[in-house]
Length: 83
Image (cartoon, rainbow, N blue to C red):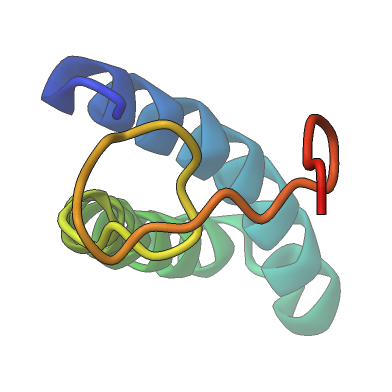
């Protein structure tokens, strides 16, 4: 499982890439760099928060993990199976 700090750093780098992309797209559509930047910043801020929430919720769900030793998990990899 990722640490909370790792989840935050991942969210930051993802949002940085999205900020540049969103600013460019909004500028192409509006022609106004200030509006484009404001729109991109607001989208990045909400995306940043919800990405962290999403990551932390999925960190609590054991489904699909390998080798956690928790009930309800399965090794979904065919490697090493003797069946």
